[in-house]
Image 1: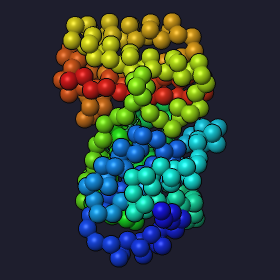
Image 2: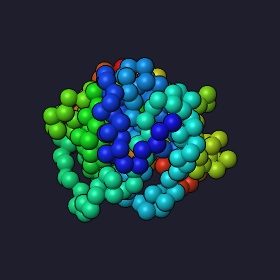
Image 3: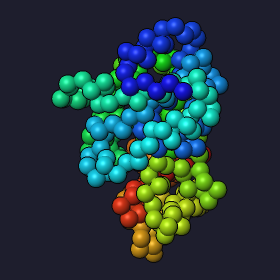
Image 4: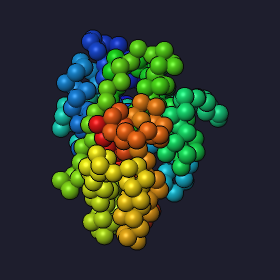
Length: 279
Ligand code: AMP
């Protein structure tokens, strides 16, 4: 299993390889959700890069950045079980940003004006900086992203278009625990009690999907708020139903077609997000 710290070493190795290149950008803490993207990339491309980089530019909370799980050896082991031909790119900050002090600024056609874009200032701008770097450096044919971070996926589609890149963005379904909880590197920060409560988030989304056929938006908003008010360990950051292309909150009475429900819940110090397609 080759782990590259330097983009020029990796580019040198890639030069010798033929056929389509797939890229799976991650921040490590590899779990079955990431592995599902990597497996798909491995099936669909001749070469695959998995990048592992906890990108400081996308964190607005230094405690969150410090607590983010990091275990490169374990990540490499899990990835090597798919294939030891996969290239891991695990750079330090200098290899990515050099001495750049000012991040590039982007506009995402209002996709960043809702949900995580409001809660985490500059988060998507930070994401866009690393994705632009990875796309321009390696010019992958295909890049793989999870539906779990649906707003990020839409923003990357928008970025890819505005950069005029020919990379194809591949949307991959959310992988869940048996109890429905969406896998996330942050789940490892949950206490025992929080782990027991966390599956309520997806249960709530499933309930919303059912109710969207019969209840009004206002009724659903009340029901969701009430559900989380009862659980004192949970702090509901937001719940909205939005158009899945524009991410703007719905204004019509049709809650279903072309829409998705989005939720963010804070459990202790850990923030969890999830979403479900309603159509
Ligand atoms: P992260 O390491 O959290 O930045 O995630 C890297 C990629 O894996 C992103 O495209 C995520 O959307 C995706 N991902 C994270 N969790 C899951 C999951 N449970 N199912 C599918 N994809 C996921």
